[in-house]
Image (tube, rainbow, N blue to C red; front, side, top):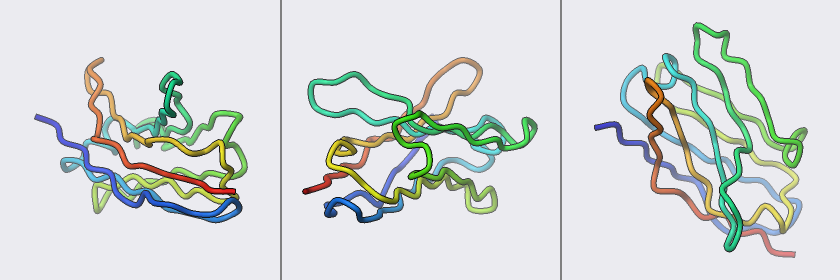
Length: 118
């Protein structure tokens, strides 16, 4: 069973920063890549950032809504994926979820709440 655990969410004022972390089983992110999604109340789950596997050169990619403000990174020695979120906006308020796909099967963390106030 693949277990992903996120942390680092919280409440912040607009313009502030947060860093989310996600830990997984050894080697899973380096081998399969990882993504961050978010889901706001009443909205569909949205892919906001991803990073490819080591064999695919660990290339990051971002949704337009977060490009230039969020940065995804990976620490393979610690089996961690991070999402640095800067210049946060009220509309970034959501539950943020870590994801990896192994042999076409998606695995998710439990999510961490991010609340941005005006």
